[in-house]
Amino acid sequence: MHLSLFFRSTLFTLLLFPAALQAETGESEYLLPEAIYRALDPIQDMIARGEYAGAEKKLIPLIAETEEGSYAAAVVHQTLGYVYGARNDYPKALESFLEAVEHNALPPEVMHELYFNIAQLQIHAGDYREGLDHLNTWLAAENDPSADAHLLAATAWYQLNDYKNMIPHVREAIRKAGKPDPSWYELLLAGYHETGDFKNAAQLLEDMINLFPGNDDYWPRLAGIYLRLGQEGKALALLELAEKRNLLDEQGLLQLAGLYLSREIPYQAAVLLQQKLDAGFIEKSAENLGLLADAWLLAQEMEKSVAVLRDQARLSGDPGVHLKLGRVYFELERWSEAVESLEAATRSGGPADMADAWLLMGMAAYNVNDHQRSLKAFRQALSYENARETAQWWLDKLNRENAAEEKS
Image (cartoon, rainbow, N blue to C red; front, top):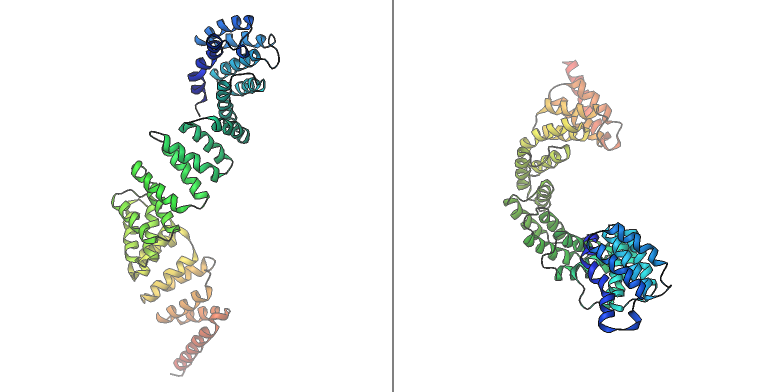
């Protein structure tokens, strides 16, 4: 909030208002005592010249010369408030304005403007409830509140986490503003999110994409809302269009890949991820490499998954990744490499599925005629209930073959 600009723009009109009213209407209710009027006249000249410190020094002793509850006392406090405001001393400005209002002696038009000033100052200071009380009083009497006034109310309601009351004010601020700032739309979008109004959130983001085409962040956010609304096809089409225009950041690219996978289009997911990882648009983290490996596996591109899983295993040291790589080698009948990966899995503290790791290692070792390693692996597998029957079958088989060899 640019409070200092507000004070300077309204200072002279409101300061001169009492004198103008006195001259034009002659209403005794708003007549200043001669001594006060003469004292204020040079003070107004000082304020016009920007001599705020001097004006303050002359105004403070003037308070003692006014009667409590009088129009003169209210005018002096009001004038002092604008001096403090012009000096950006907002706590003192607020104190003076509240004093002016408490006298209840100023004309309705002046009181009306003071309510707005007080609301601004209180909201600026974090007194949102009190600020809203004064602002609501002002709004009730204002024929056509400005966009900034509605935004002020919206800001206070936002700080109070009252999004239901915030939303109408942001809407009105956007409607009235000639060229609303993108942050106003962000505020309204936050309100829709917090109230679960994803239908309006989607419509708003569609408008934001058209109004602010330079903000690439809106595309994946809109796709996320489409997903919340169960409109997966719209989300996918939106992200594909954004990707063709090179508008997606890493988050958006991963979101698009995830959509391809959820819609069982793994090959497109893998190609997208591979290209963007190679080009540096997506970080080569263990997590992202794991997503790529899964995409290649789902696309039945086993050989392509091997290189990715190797990189992932090296980065993460995760025994589960070594196990997955061992399984792929096993499927490809690359037995020696399968044994190597499975051994790495068991050395790394063990994957979640240790039973499977030992069974696969035993079978892979058997296929390279390493019966000692195979026996050791199956004996380890015996300690797992879900692998015991298979491990015992292999041990019996190995024992029979060993016995047959010894006889021969």
